[in-house]
Image (cartoon, rainbow, N blue to C red; front, side, top):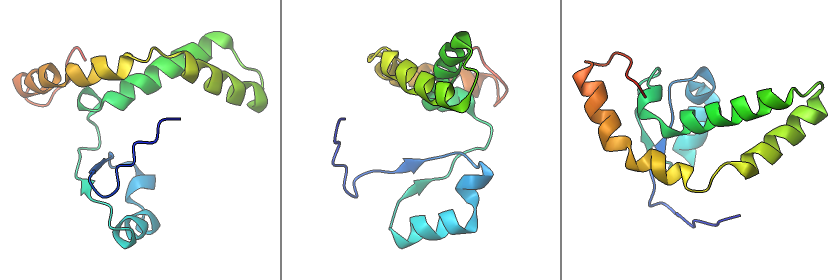
Length: 111
């Protein structure tokens, strides 16, 4: 695993999913001095990880796991198979995503 050793030089981006906005989560983040970027709750066009989750979900679905153990194994194996440059591609496309969301005035885009 890659150890990024980010220390305090990072900003956590998360959406407003209830588990992210729960009191206990907010308290933990505050107690641990984590800098959190406020983000829209429904903004998959602007959140590259959503595309990775979709890729993983589709790959796992194709394997049709029939129980929890198979699901876990499938998730781990398919995650390892995701192309390493996928993240870079998603990050590089971010300026175009921003422009598309602005042009669509916040509505859905092709992303």
